[in-house]
Structures are given as structure tokens and as C-alpha cells.
Image 1 (cartoon, rainbow, N blue to C red):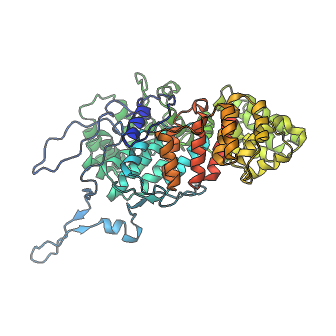
Image 2: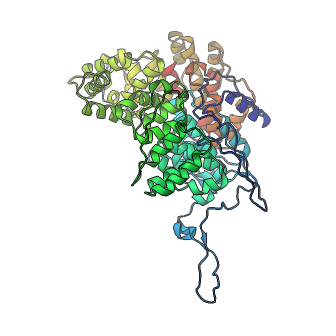
Length: 604
């Protein structure tokens, strides 16, 4: 199963065309598969039969189909979790009615309804319960399944995570567990391993469907958390003929201090495979970590040419170092998973964390803390420690000028645009400590861009009184400031258009028009002058505009991500930015609309 299918864009296009929606054409990256051979085959839905049939050959560990399996007719049926037992009365050798032990494991007041699935995280204000309104459930499901993540914008990625995590009404026609599975899978492809696991865990195990079992395994592996499979392993093994779940049962028995049972289960799972099978050896290694574990396993990566989610997740959990060359065989999503893996050291996570910060998976505060940990734990003169000390200087130098010099060092060091943007995220709070002054106008553009990466708009807005009106700093503030409600004049915007390059001028006009900060006449004239076709219409623009008018923020966010499914800002047309910003504003998400518009200038 590919983390980002090579035909993802085509799949989304076909799905939306089927619903009467077309998309702007955007170039895409093509990450490689993270999963081992055998994951590309969907698990067939077991059909009821009067007598047991021979079991088909098990699939590879953690097997998931190229897209989560379509909902099945029995999706709402109770899964055979094995929680019933017969109680003997001891009188007349009679048998009492079966007792459902799940009622004692999870009392009624603690059960979660499938009508609403999602989690509320600190700092991640959820979308409203009716965020998807009356949108067709199958349509939303297809959009999520075929979206080629991650997207270009850091702020849109943050908003998409918020929407996918939110506790919302399950759309009509969908099973709540299956809808959760689609959200989990998209979060994983975005690199949001922690959020994906949280959504999966909001569904009670007794309500899991085959699709959610598959995605829950991927979420556990993405977090390097094989223990997270234990509450699900028995139930999953009864509805999925998946070698990964067979291994999970063995690992969980071992972790529970039952070495004899674990050994038997492991031998069954390994039957028919070569003895030095890397997937089986990793499972055996985890199994031996439990109390009374008796199997010592040495992991050799020689001959392994593909890093899969199974291999990475179990190796990370066991403290087995993965060769760096194998990371080149994966997509960017695993890089983001790596940034948040608790089993890895701060130094091994740092490069991944910077990239994850540029994407929105990692926060400014988290990145600063990570550098602080590296500085505290290392006395060497390594490049990472040098960066940590420069970061400290950004906060502690005696004069603002010295702090800005340290920031410049950090900003200028990376060789790629994404790396330089990550450093803007890193210095966001340090930049907010610099008081507005004409003495620092040379660095105002990057100081303001840095603050806005973390949403520190109030501190950034304070610079309006000192920045020039034809600078990038001014343009970002005109987009980010919530108090700019009156229309900007044609002359003000035209002044920036003449000073900036063509691309930035186009994005500025598109952002202002989307935010409603230009009069209709000025919008038309400036759009014509910059070559931005804000009035152009196609099926995608109509879909996102209609969703905004229906006040469906969840649908708008998904469609916005569809329009921006590229990792390169240079491939986002200004017309696409206009419709995304306008739709978010109308749908009740003006803060994100402003931040995305300002981000476009910062990254152009």
C-alpha cells in the first residue's frame, strides 16, 4: 500500500468529476511505498458459511489495501470479539444465558457513539459538529482517500489536521468507524502520526470495522507503538486474515509476560516464510522485550532494500537503528513520523523535525524545545549544537541588533527554500521579542514572516507603523491584520505591484481579493493588470464556493486541500489561492484565510 499513490491526483480528479467537480491541474511528488510486498491486495470481506472453509494465505504484516477497503454490507454488524462466556449454575447441570463481558469492560456511560467521532486536543479548536453539513458521505470519503498529501501550505495543513481530528457528525450513508478510518489514513499520509492514532482510539474496539483495524495498525506503527495493537489484536485476527495481526498476537502475548503462548503464536505466524524473514525477526524482537522473554534476536539489514511502516515501527520501538540509506526508499510522510517518534534521540529526530515544522506537523515551541534538549545534552562542537547556541543568542543577546545577527545566521544557512522556511518557524518567538524600529527595516520582511508562521499576528502588526508601503513586510501585514476591513486603494496595491516581482504581485492581489479587501472595480482592474483570472470558473471553483455558501467548513477545508495538493508553493496558481482564501473566509475561518494568504507572500 503506497503512502502516496502515484495516481492519487488522477483518482481525486476522477472522483470529483463523478460528482460534477473538476480540479485545477497541479504537479505532484511521487513518494515510494512504505509497506512490504503483499500490502497491495485488499483483504476480502469474510462471507458467512455453514462450515469453516480453509483459510487463505495470510498477507504481509500490517497489510492494507491501496485505499482502505470499501464499506461492507456487514459494517454495522457486531464483530465476534469473543467476549461471551457460559456460566454454570451448578443446579441440574443447567446453563445460564451468555454474559457479555464487554459491558463490564466498558460501561454504557463511557461508550463512544459512532454518530460523532473525533478528539479535542489542546490548541486544536475543533470544527463545529455540522462541519460537513449535508455533503454526500461517499463524496467526502473519496476526496479524503485520494488526496495526495502533504499539501503546499503549512497553515492549510494545520487546518486540515484540525478538521480531520474534530468530533463531527458522521455524514449520512457512512459507518462512523469507516469514516474515522478514512480520516486516520489521510492524517498518516500528511505525516500526522499522533493525531491519526488519537482518532482511531476514539472508536470503541467493539465497533471496529475491517477498514479501521487496518488503519489502526498503520497508526500504531507510525508512532512506533506496537503495544497499541494489543487491545485490537484478537478482534482483528477474527475478521482479517492478515499476517501482521498474527504477529501482533504473538508480540502482545510476549509483552504480557506469556512467553510460551507467545512462542506458539509466533511459530504459527512464521509458518511458510523463510527463517531470516526481516518482518518476522522484528516481531520476535518485540516479543522478547516482555517479562520472561527468552528469545534473543539480532537484526541484520543486509539484503533489505525497502523500509516499510512495519519495519520502521517495530525497529523504532525496539531501539534498533535503521540504516539511513533505507530512509531514501520512503515518502516524506515517514520523515514526519520520525520527527515525533518518542523512541528516537533528539539528535536523530532534529533534521526531520525541521522539515516537519515547515509542514505544520511540528510547532515552533516543539522545535525550540528540541534544540534546547540537544544543547543541554551535548558539549561537542557539532553543527546541531552550534545551531542551538545561535538560537539561544537570538533570545539572550544584549542588544536587538545582536539578536537579529544570530537570526540571520540561522535564516541564511539552509540551502533549500523549505529549509529556510523551517528556520523562520524556529525563530518565530525570538522575532516577536524585537521591538518595531526603523533601525531594523532591513530584516523586517523576515521578522514578520517568522512571527506569522506561529500566528503571532499582534506582535507582527505592531510593525505597520514603521515598514514601507512597497515592501513584502507591508504586503504580509495587509493580508494578516484582522483590522484591515476597509478596501485598500488601487494606488496602494499598485505601488507594491510595481515594486515586487510578478509572482508576489499576483499572490498579493489574489489574497486581497479573496479576503474582500479590494473594491469590486479595483479587484477587476488589478487582476487584469497582474494577469490573475479571479473571475474564471470551473467545476472545482464552483464546488468550493458552493460549500462555503452552505457554510460547510469541513467540506471547504477538504476541497482547499484538493486545490493545493502539491509540496511546492510555486505550483499553486494565484487563482487557486483566491478561491481558497475566499471560501475559508465565507465559511467562518477568516484567521486561517489570512495566514494562508500571508504565507503565500513569505514563500513566493
